[in-house]
Image 1 (spheres, helix red, strand yellow):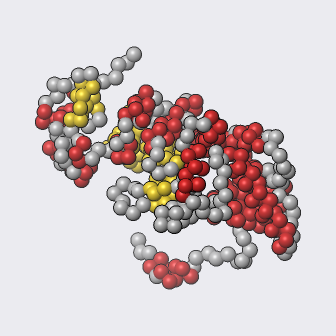
Image 2: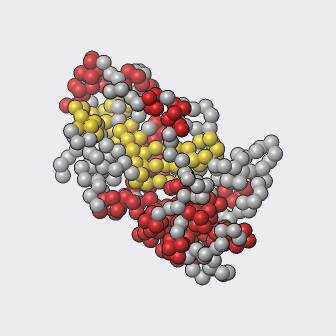
Image 3: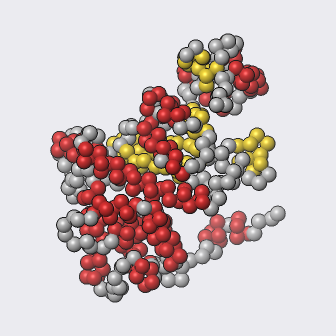
Length: 398
């Protein structure tokens, strides 16, 4: 088929792109505002927040629900979690009907003083929320000396009862905001055909602020931030590490008539999330996201994890994951392949317990092989891997 000329000419294609007919900000449909408001209420996160803010001195200000709805809409439409963008959304991009839902007062577009006063109310409401939930509130308007910042940062690590309670509360709020979409998708039958397979990964969550400076003796505004190094990267990103759990699908060797190479057509949603300082609690954070799914009654299948989890101490990751019922699919380094040890007399071969009488050529079939060879095995390696199957230990049916 011959492509239209405009498709082959990049300049003509750019001229034919639709352009907004006005410089006014795009209006967000009421249906989307209602959807965000519904998710906030359905999640139960607002109940936890209201209970924590109850009885605190000072005026109530704007409802926390209004601020969170503005942030979620800004994230969806502008890919920004900035409070300034949330204010613009609430003032300029939603209809009067939607503003009445969120208790946003009517403000004349040309009144800068009223707009500024509303923005200040948004900032104060968000500050009230963070003050109540932060285990160690600090002055975010300046960089603290390293020694002073270390005292505040320790509140995110110590065993103080109040600090632990606030950290747990923050994680509960995060879990509820993430899991509400999973619950709705499950109730509507969107996970039909899903075998419970998931993948976990720790990815960089960059911060906007400058990193710590030992030369100047000043900490970052993000006092618990650090350097996140992705696998194989020599340059780190300053900020946090986000542990994400996603629903995944197996690939059928011959493809699937309804979903191509995927076995099922379920949505590949984020099932859990945990934000932490880089390099800390890598395994426990992944275990937490899995444990949060248990009350939903979702199926349990394979859990794929990269080398960051392969290197975790067994008590921090693998033992908990296996007790939950997941089968692990781990990625091993070149010097970790083949026979890795034994457990109660059974040989551990590439992460799977096997009969100790497995022939040595089969047990060491992957020993010393590089990643490229293992990912794309030749016919000989495929035959040896297939010959291992009868020697792997099977789970008891009871």
